[in-house]
Amino acid sequence: MKGRKSLQERKTKGSLFIVSAPSGTGKTTLCRKLVLSVPNLHFSVSFTTRDPRPGEIPDTDYTFISRNEFLSMIEKGEFLEWAEVHGALYGTSRKRIEDSLNKGFDVLLDIDTQGAAQIRKANQEGVYIFILPPTMQVLQQRLEQRKTDSKEQVKERLRKAVLEIKSYSLYDYVIINDKIDVAFKQLEAIVISHHVSTGMINPAWIEERFK
Image (tube, rainbow, N blue to C red):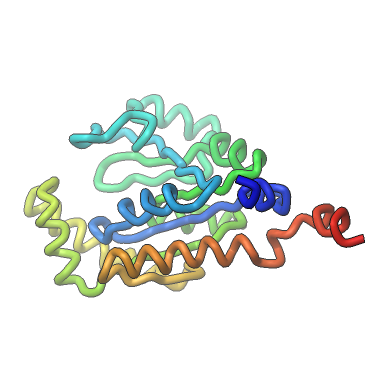
């Protein structure tokens, strides 16, 4: 616990980690493992208009709201980013992110390339990470094996994946998820190395201890 407190004292503010990947790449699994592994890292819960999938918990996996409620939030400027994906709307609450960062917590944001591009355009500071499947053939197998989509939906996700992958250069890091354990170690290493970067040092912390 002492080490965790020391890390919090060194930081002036939390950091935002933005993770994107084509559907079926394993992004959600990697992000969940990361939150369990890294202290003081909070998972950002997005708003969505789609129906919950089997096993999903409201306000843990997503905050599920109506389309009208979502559109009202857009008008009020309450989203840091939002996008329409496969007919459903997804958005990140600006207030939720800012509140966590200002309290010194890191935030993990699992969003698609549209949302990440909006955040980049707004000059939001963050660490941008893109996760790739080893091949399109493997991605297709993973989508088919999870049995949550029809054949037409799988085909649409693969078509969209080709477009999303072209956005990889907008990110700071690219991880190829061939083996989940290896990909997780790489993702964890990115977060840990960011924590010890010069920009994460609170000048007051240095001044107090090294007069």
